[in-house]
Amino acid sequence: MSFLDHLEDLRWHLIRICIAVIIVATLAFIFSKYIFEGIIFAPLNMSFPTYHFLCEAGNFLGFNTSFCAEKMPMIIQNRTMAGQFSADIWTAIFAGFVISFPYVVYQMWTFISPGLHDNERKHSRGFIVISSLLFFIGVLFGYYIVTPLSLNFLANYSISDIVDNQIDISSYIALVRSSALASGLIFELPIIIYFLTKIGLVTPSILIKYRKYALVIVLILSAIITPPDVASQIIVAIPILILYQVSIYISKIVIRNQSRKLSKEKTKNHE
Image (cartoon, rainbow, N blue to C red):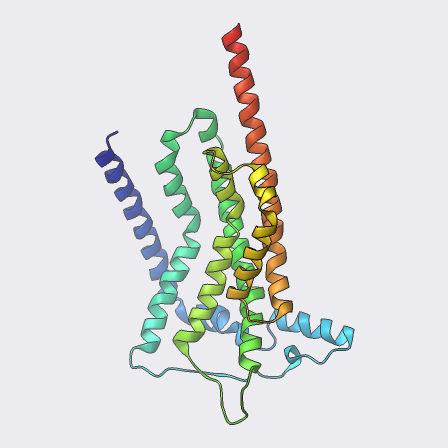
């Protein structure tokens, strides 16, 4: 196809993605009360699983921790006329994108798959399943680990007793949304490395050579999406480092398969 034909094809894939997200977002808007009370505002309750686990761990180690508090020292408030409506709309759109992510990946894959070989297209189902699984694991990690750690730290941080934490609803939802979405996208690292290796931009030797620099980047990244305490940064950095090691292994497999393919083609040419 010509360049304009490719753009037209891409436009229709993007339209289908938007339609899917809007449909799911509409359903999320209908059930928004459950989403807010059962999911979005759940980390404000000290009975949240993460707080309970960390409280038990602190008691076992003999530490006094804020995870054992009876109530989160903060109040969620709305200070604008359309604040709650706007929060409802954007949360529904966010939920629509997260839930529709497998379909989003499928549409993007169907756009790029015609440019791949037949044997590469055979793995499309595996690619969609793995990338979606990594994304959902990342979202859950951001929701159950990053969000409660950030909330607990920021809610208990105080410069003076005369200052109360009365947090605007948009600020709170932005923290939950960014923690979950950022973690979900970070967990796509193995998929990104796979494609970068396929097109020759990344090799296992490059990943190993710059591993120490990647460690610094990971620590900086974990510092951005978590509160500035060492424990939270380590908790976030560990799975990212594991993903980096997995990416090196995936890159080695891709290079090995490419080498085998080239050797087979050379053998056929000689015959």
